[in-house]
Amino acid sequence: MFKKIVIATDGSDLSLKAAEKGMSLAKMFSAKLQVIYVIDQRVFFFPHEVQVLAPENPYFEILDKLRENGEAILNKMDKKAGKIGVEIDKFILEGSVVKEIRNTVKESHADLLIIGAYGKTGGENEMLGSIAQALASSPPCSLLIIQDRKSTRLNSSHIPLSRMPS
Image 1 (tube, rainbow, N blue to C red):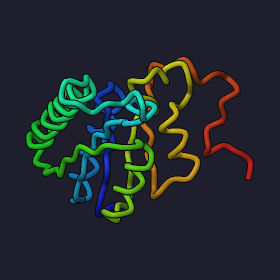
Image 2: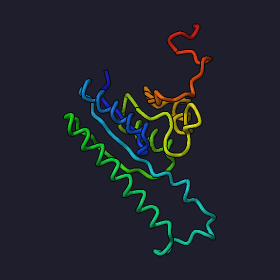
Image 3: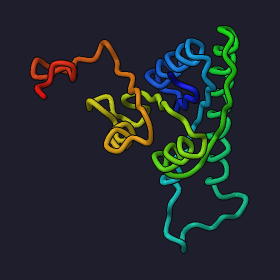
Image 4: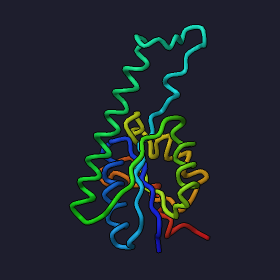
């Protein structure tokens, strides 16, 4: 059913659950698995006059720390995948998170994208975080969004898709 699966992670609990689900599906369908970590460079945009890219600029130190964090997360996922017999291709990307995810899915011809409902940027107060909302509004391929089962965000007015009137 699925030949190529892409998982986007930021290291949050839900993205790690999404990765576990992706690994299971990759094993079940003998699919290729690609895991990406995107460094959101929107946080680095400063007016041109202020942004002096000298080696002592904290920009480089912060970017190095983000890259190290991404490598640690991807290596942890690689070890977990190896334990269940799944190989992954892993990449650290930099740019707009949604754009980089869409480009990766398109370029890799993925037929399934798996993400967490929200990540580390404070989306836990919403049903979907901003990245999940943007991807769900116009998915680049089939999209599986992993939700926190313990979440109280879904109330009695929530109607499962399988029971929605047609």
